[in-house]
Length: 447
Ligand code: SF4
Image (tube, rainbow, N blue to C red; front, side, top):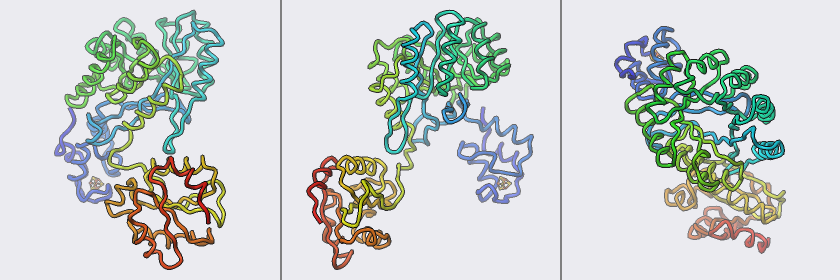
């Protein structure tokens, strides 16, 4: 069980020096107990207390990394049941299964797709994160597959039922920090030896969560800490039930044996690729640590990664872009000027439409704290006087020789007041309500 605020307070220096950013040691202790601060913020706590506190204040779901370098993924580390309580920290990695029983051509084609599929949405890259390399043929074929997988630089999972093959592969690729699949009741001790010798993370697999917790108990007793759990569900309903149960047990009851990211091999039971995408999105919402699908199909990867993105954004912090003037399509002094808000989705949709129109434009992005056009208007952040102050503060009048500015059609009612606030010589024009109508509007725009 975790420590209470008072128990944590007793382990702190109790000098109230404020160096941690809190007014008193007690306030800091309360934050630590609530999982809202890190012990490293107090530079004066003793090593002994730090060790006790680190364990007591560690997230209820073990956090660890897989892979190395730029592609490395972090899993686990979650502290709440619901996104509105705090936030979810580590986006669920999407792994694609590649088997050594597939033909060389099929393997190469799959790996090349895994490396190349990447979408950009609101400034973020949405890609395939990992490879699940599965051993079905002989050891030599599996090692040949792993050579190709390792060359992609994606983090990967070494999956083999053959202990010797798993050991050999773990030794050979340990510097790339892959994950081992899987420890079971029958082989947990032997897998624990391999994991300890190589420092690799392990998936504990069992028939249901009860069996999984027996496997994790063995691994923990052997000193293996970086574990993910696979309860081998036979359908979506069981997978969801196990994910929810594991999350609830680890966060609410502090059950250590299931306090690990869940490992969801969806390709084992989904009927087809489309169902895999639907199930993956559902399980990411509750509470998949890693998902494995069968094909690197862009039509499935996009919806899965977009739904993941929606789940793993911080609900308390709107996605924003920086305030400023963005030149699009090489504008000059005769190009139109458009003003809008700094909500990231608005920016990326509007800028994409301007780009598609091929009309050179100056896009003025005003800081509205990440609110969309209508919300910012009703909150008094995208209103005539504030907009005029912002426009006058910028050097837009050095960039263009005209004094025309286009506002979103949704705030057409602002045009008169905005023009008045800007002063003589300015003309406020009303743009379309929908960004999709911008290309047509811009093509007809005249100085
Ligand atoms: Fe107390 Fe440490 Fe914070 Fe100082 S930095 S107030 S000693 S908890």
